Amino acid sequence: MSDGAQNLSRRDVMRIGATGVAAAGLAGAGLPVLADDQAAPGKLPKRRYGRTGLEIGWMVGASDWPKELIPRAVHAGVNYWHKAQKWTAETMPPALKAQPRESYYLECVVDRVNGDHSRGKIDEERHYEFVKNCLKESGVGYYDVFKFHFGYHSIAEAKQNPGMVRAFERLKKEGLVKHLAISQHHYNNIGGDMAWEIMHYLADHEPYEATQFFYTYNDRKEVGEWIDAAKKKDIGTIAMKTMGGVGRAAQDQKFTKLLADPKYAGSTPAAAMVKWLKSNESLTAAVIATRNFDQFRENAGAAASLAMNPQDRAALGLLAGYNKGLTCLLCAECVTSCPEHIGVADIFRYERYARDYFDLDRAQKEYAALTKNGASCVGCGDCLPACVQQIDIAAKLGDVHKLLG
Image (tube, rainbow, N blue to C red; front, side, top):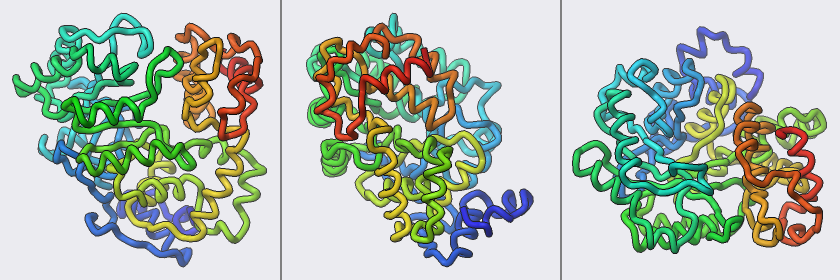
């Protein structure tokens, strides 16, 4: 953010709102402030969430955001809330309770049972009861979106096991949920399929109306191709794990010194990443890691008010160079070559929680649940040719094991 934004008082921040702060600071720096056609001044733009027909704010909120951010997010136009099943009647944010129920959208994510996302099972009856219990505890009446968390292991499983869809259909018939979505991961480490392969199948054969998936700058072309195909098929798309390397770069003194060059003036990797994501008109929205007010101000301001400019493109190029050999893009291509079938992308996803999102406790908890961790690597090197990031995967697995093990 520019000095103009940083020097605003807390009273000014609360008066004009988070997106207004970002716009004020960047306008003061002489950069263009371009409002989205669909957005009111200072508000996040809205895009149609595929077949659901919901008009959702481009930046997705989450139930694990700090509670003091929720009123500001609502004011900025965040109206879609990820993992809302975690809120009970007591913890439901007052800023949402004060709004008409139809003015915001709550998403309930539904996990496998009797194990984690790789080993757990799909169980129609238990998924059905889970959602009913969450609704009873929250008192919200209904969830707008029922989302299958982590997704199918393979196209074959999607064909053979309709339990998740049947649970949704029963709940929808009772008026307890409205729309069906999926958050799809890769499962080539257990002999399954890649996320985009599964989503292409679902778009043509199952009643899923929206999808969520990994997507960041310099990601694999197949992800971009899925986003374009989904738009044509009227499937909603939400990008997640979007800020690859942004957090660790911001803490690296060598990187921040490079960023001080005038050619990057007025931009940051975080703001540039947000604007790059938003520039894809086929992408409905994005989940962006937000841990504090400064992050929210920067991210929401970029999403609400700005078009990409040369400084942003330069900042993304700098970040891409920084990430080379260091930051996994979670494409999971290396996993196919691993003779030990280590979930390399999962391990590096947990590293991202620690080093980019600064959530070490979550990273260690997730890592501890793995059946094969970084210490399982035998150092054969079979995975190395597959890594577009040129990461020394064996060495990095050892480093992450020291961090999280």
